[in-house]
Each structure stands twice: as structure tokens, then as C-alpha cells.
Image (cartoon, rainbow, N blue to C red; front, side, top):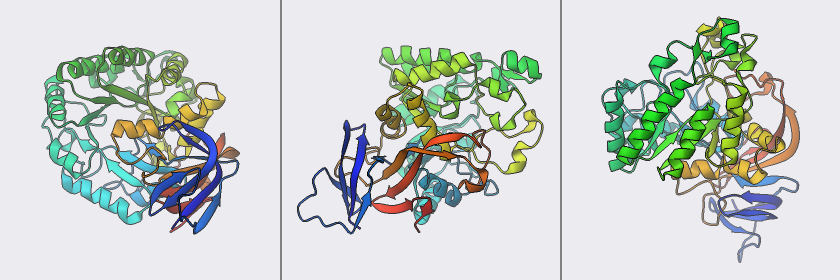
Length: 430
């Protein structure tokens, strides 16, 4: 279908475009901005007056639960939620059952996502077999199967020698390591940030040094091996400083932060709210402000949802025994836009953190931009639409989010995937 998107404010950080003009789509690709190409005749025109037209959102971390935990969610349910949230590409961690440690599992996930046709799913390969932290996987085979990088998720490695060998292997094959810095021994059995709130509630804490100690070791090995590393879910002020220092030294490192770590702090746990039980934990207000500043200074490049859908029972036990994680797909865009209202980022910069920058981190040849010739993955949203997150109207199977009943700003009106209109004003088009 040939589509004209008319009178929208096109914001494409990759090409520096921020203006009101038309966008033209044909054969699944963007063919022109501004003036229609010769002989173009639209089969359908989408009126985007008063709306923002940007690249389809790219989420760097979203657990889809399939295969292995379909009682929590499925690729079908979560890509449906993604489409209705303007997200066209999802990067999922390897902690499925079976683990994403062979090309067969990669193909299973990617083929299932293609059959559903509501989002592009890019699984990260496991860094070690079974995520056991000991024996390295065949990283080259995982890359050839379509993995944009490898990760051990939050599973600990046996020792630093394993990480060194992994970095050397990955560097040899020009593969990105997606790392979550946490020293398992220092984290111990903690479930909240170590500080006054943890003491008051009598909950075991995870100290900031659990993150920074691990990060220091990882950065030292990255310098030694030349491996390209992306650090996920940073939570502390010192970690932001360490990444800034590494980047100033020219190390090929990038980092992201979750949308909820930019809005919540450990104070939100004060009433034992299990919906705020996350890992790594919510930190202090000082840490949260440092994360915001890190985004503003471009030390932190991207915002991810860290989407972790759970069934209701997973959050009903005593706090320590509940499953950590937030269902975050449907709040990724509005929480990013909230940073604009808080004068932390410009609108273009906020959009870049969930489109252009994630595409660069994943090294996507196609995606994260509205340049002519690129696949027409497009998100069109109303930046002034206020709405309330209602569990009865959530599209993800997981309703575990502390943002229930929050008034949010910014609602997706249309989502296009490869030039196909898959979501229109709250409805999935199948």
C-alpha cells in the first residue's frame, strides 16, 4: 500500500529533521519527505496534523517470556502491546527456556515473531551455555543466526577469566557484549537499595558498590581486550561517572537506563509496594538525578522499558519473595516524554533515546530513522493527549506496574511496520 502521512511534525533525530511536512511510503519503504516523488499516488492518506511522526520505537530490553514461561506472557501478547505503544523493534534477553544459546532457539523466536507480524524481535544470544557462567557459547553462530549481541543477563559468571575470554571472542567477531554490572556476592540476597529505606523496612539491601565494583572490572577488561560493550540498566551516580570517564578515554562503551529508574526512587518502596520490586533496585533520589543528568549529557545513550510481565500471583507474596520486574512496554513512550516536561531533554533528544540511539547500539542497518530508502517503521503519536494507565485496558498480559492510575501524556495514534499499518487509534489491524 502506498501511504501519505500528511501535515505531521516529523522528528527524525538521525537526519536532524524537525519540521512539519509530508512523508511518503511505498513498497514497505520511505520514499520521500516533503514533496511526493514523481508518479506517486497514495492509496491512503493519514492525517497527522497536530501529531508527531517519528521512527518506530526500539526497545533495548524486553522479556517476552516465550519460549518457556507462556503462563506469564507470549510473543503474540507482548508484540501486540508493543505495536499499540509505537514500538516496532524489541531486543529480548536470552533468559528463556530453553536459553538462547543455539541458532535453533534464535530461529524459533524470530520465526514466531515474523508469523505474528506485529514487531521485529531481536534476541540476544547467551554469553555462556545455559547462562551457567562457565562455558562460552558459539558466539559466531549466534551472530550469523541474527543475534545483535550476547549477554549473560543478570546471571553471574564463574570468574573474571570467563569474562575476559568472552570479550576476546566477541572482539574477534565484532560482536557487542550487553552487560549488566552486578557483583553477585555483594548483592547477596538483597532486594532493595541499601540505605535508610532498607533499614527502616528491615529488608536486605543491595549496595551501590555491587554495581560499581562489577563495572570497574568490566571496564578494565574492555580496555584490555578492545571489546565493544553496552552496559544495561545502570542505576547509580558513580556508574554514570565511570562510563563518562571510559568514553573520554575512547573506549567503545555505551550505556542505557530503564524508564522507571528515571522516575522512581527507593522511597516508592516505603509501603512494601511489591510493584516497585525490581532488579537492579530503585536507588536514591541523588542516583536518579545523576541518571537524568547522564541522559542530558549523552553519557547514557538510550532508555529501555526493561519489560518483565508477570502473572498477578508473582507480586502477592511478602516483598522479599515476590518476583522482581515491571511491565513496561506501554509506559516507555510517555515516561520518555515526561523527561521533556521535566526540562531534562528536548523533544528531539527524548525521541532519540528510544529510536536512533538504540538502533546505533544494535548496529541496525535498517531502523531508527525516517530517511528515504529505509523500512517504513513509523510511530505517530499525539504529544498532548492525557490518559490514565488502567489495568483493564492494558494490552500486555502483565499488569505489574507501579504506574497504574498515573496520568500520562502522549498517546500513540498509528504504528506502521515495514509500511503496513498495524495499529490505528487503539485497535490492532490484523
